[in-house]
Length: 130
Image 1 (tube, rainbow, N blue to C red):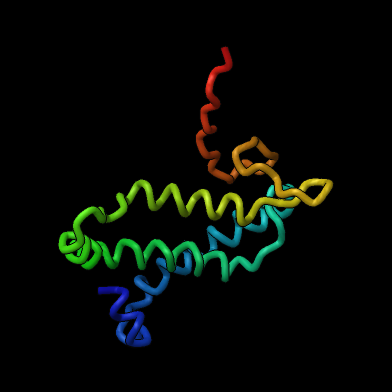
Image 2 (spheres, rainbow, N blue to C red; image 1 turned 90 degrees about the vertical axis):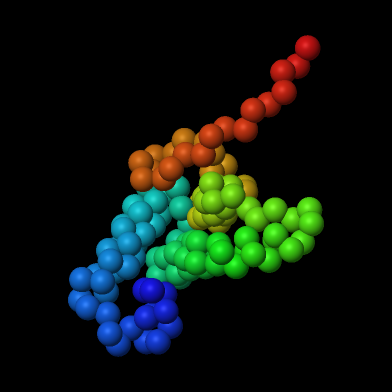
């Protein structure tokens, strides 16, 4: 419902409802600014980061029934699970925001940094060597 109201310009949304996405934007702005200040993130526009993350998630969850309906007609194509999509967005954000290290390479987003606000992703298991 809220997405439909936003698409119509948000003219009928009450102030409490309008405040919700503004709180999320404020949180993203604080996280980005702290990450840049601590050297974990490269400088990015917090508003564009917010729109990228929230827009992707809103679209994914807003189109769930459509994806299920379409994929039920296509054999062998299963709709992606919500947890897999969220993990995908976390990976994109972590690697996309990672600050460059000396030598021009981006920081490994799975390695600890001084930024305490970043969610660390589980380390990928390496095969044991015999």
